[in-house]
Figure 1: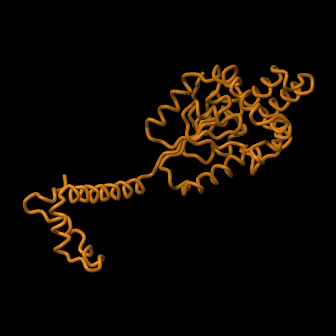
Figure 2: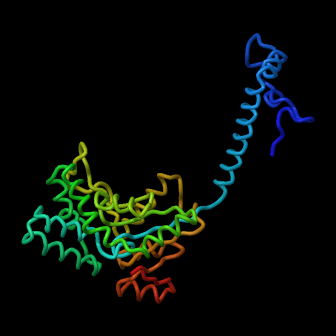
Figure 3: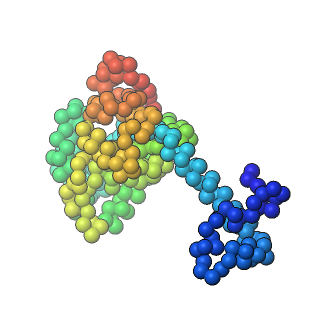
Amino acid sequence: MPSSPRRRGSRCLIDWIPAFAGMTSGVSRQYVKRMLAKYEFLEMTLWNLFNLRNLRTKYLIQHRSNKLNLALFDLDNTLLSGDSDFEWSQFLIEQGVLDRELFEAKNLTFYEQYKAGTLDIHAFLDFQFKPLSSHKRKELDQWHADFMRIKVRPMMNEAGKKLVASHRAAGDICAIITATNSFVTAPIAHEYGVEFLIATEPQQKDGEFTGLVHGVPCFREGKITRLEAWMKHHDWTWGSFADTTFYSDSLNDLPLMALVKNPVAVDPDDTLRSHAEQHGWRIISLR
């Protein structure tokens, strides 16, 4: 504990501020000392602030010198036991918002292409963003609340929640990184208690969706592009992290999994499982 300003052998607080009197025209150093003696509570307050500032400085130095750990989570079929992108379209079909005959077959086709690793992301986003641009944001938000209750929460299994909680308890920086757009996924990330979301961004104008994509889609190599842009925004680089972990189920995430120190295959598809076994990656199940 630092000494009190009145403890025997200690110096008066004003002695720690040698230029104080000189900064105030016409006020002597002795006068300042007498004033502080008269108002001891003020001196004690200044003393406490002085020491708090030192503690804060020491904390910041220590904090900057310690490297962080980064935990990245794919969302669909990794934390979730299903695909929120696919289920969003299915939900809108079931609600009568989208025509079943026109949209359901296309939705299934795109989903199969995704699983096979042959998806044209821009063709898919044209399809996926059309409902967003065709309806007002207020109406979309109302539908999304029902979507969370009917479709998403039943896919949020306990094992996924515990995995995220374990990384948060360890003090790791946690981020969900997903090809699914941020309108669909932001409330899901919030449900998991994950602060950071890196997702495909739908373009907006005056708070409404335009039907276009903003920036690089967060898909395959695009996940690396978006992740490194996110790091730069927070003044981080790969070297800022002592450990980097990425959990995913999909062959589409092989480019990013190859970059992190700890790639973890979660209930993986056949291609990712084979790759993980060949390279000695961890394979786990959250089902």
